[in-house]
Image (cartoon, rainbow, N blue to C red):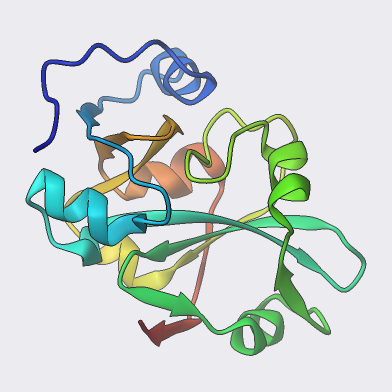
Length: 164
């Protein structure tokens, strides 16, 4: 069961959100290795489609980028590369993703990253009334309006979702 009473320390993500005046809710849960968005959605009692995963990827020149995708969908790297004008896109190795973001894999937030990276969001995420996204540590999601992704991160809408 989700640990709603657990205190979560500030993270670079929550510091960035608070500094920007973004209203968000906090949703701690018991992190499970390789549980992914299915596990957090189950513990928090929300549809996995509303839990947005933060993926650190890179283009053919090894330039990092962030992709925000529904928890129950996969990223079509071919479709993404076409949309953003790259030859190819692939996931970063965990240690490379951690170096770019400053977060442990499983706790990566698009807010407060160590390195500024372009952010792409699956367009249908922006149509949701509210999303849960990682708050900067494993076992911790924040709830916010998806429009914050565009307003605060400059996220560009793309169409690259594959059925999970």
